[in-house]
View 1: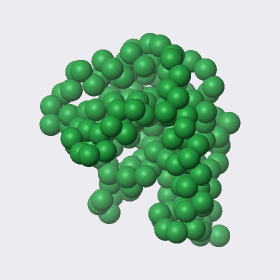
View 2: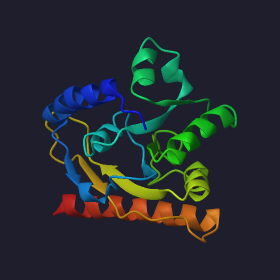
View 3: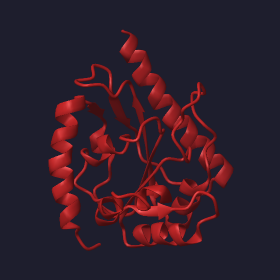
View 4: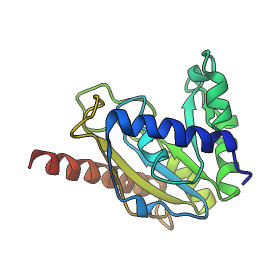
Amino acid sequence: MKKNRFYRFARIVLGFVFKLYYHPKVIGKENIIKEGPIIIAGNHKHVMDQCGIIISTKREIHYMAKKEYFDSKYAWFFKKTGCISVNRSIHDDVAKEKALDVLRNNGALGIFPEGTRNKTKEFLLPFKFGCVSMAGKTDAYIIPFSVTGDYKFRSKNLVYRIGKPFKVGKRSLEEANKKLEKEIGNLMKLSLKEDKK
C-alpha cells in the first residue's frame, strides 16, 4: 500500500507526547506481523485506546472510527491518518468494503469488536462479528490486544498487552468470535493479575 507520510509524521510526534504524558507499558510488540493483512483487535475503554498500538509498530493502521468523528472539526485529521468512517446506525457496507480493500492490499486494520467504548461494569461487551468475518474473507491474521489501567498523567498501571496472531481458518464465525473474546479477556486478566502484585 502507498505510504502515508502524514500518518508517519503524526505517529512520531503524537506518539512522543502520548508516551511522555501517559507513560504506557506495552508488552508483546513482536506479535505484530510486519507484512501481510492483519486485523488488530482489542477491548475498548477510552478514546485513546488505539494510541498504544499505533506507537508499537511502524505499520500504518487503518482504524475503523465512528462517523461522528468525521462530522467534527477534527474530520481532516481522521481522514489524513487513514481512518475509515463507520455509520453505526446502519449496516455500513461502504465502510466494510473500504476495510476489506485495506486487507486485500496486505494492509493493517484496527478494530474494537465491542463496537463502542465499554462504560458499563461488564468485563467485556458482546463482540460484533465484523472482525472475524473480514479476517475469514481475506485470510488475514487477527492480533488480539488488551488495554488495562488508568489514563492518568504518568500512569503507573496503563498496560497494552499484545497477544499471538491467529487465523479464522476452518472455524465458524461463532467459534472464531468466541476465541477472539477469550484471547482478549485472557490478556486483560493477565495484566490485571500482574497489577495486583
